[in-house]
Image (cartoon, rainbow, N blue to C red; front, side, top):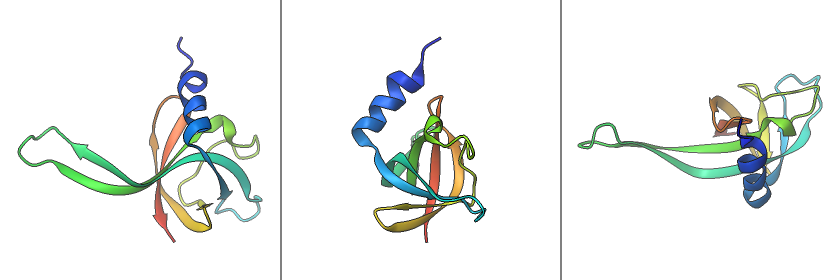
Length: 108
């Protein structure tokens, strides 16, 4: 089986990743640092209907699940994070390449 995480996610994160502070909504869990590939103006285009494409701008962060600590193994909707001093809340978590997730964010 192809190792997506080591051959796609890891090199991409080494090139495009930046350190972020992850703050669980559950305040009994201490904030921690992970790397993420941040996109302020990610645009999705639906090409199913060629007459009227729909696009929407999203703020997203791509993360590798192996970067999460063992006591907090994956992101949870409603958690917070900080990128370059700007706070965001996770409003949705979408599948991505195996071993990673796409976090849809809302600027706080």
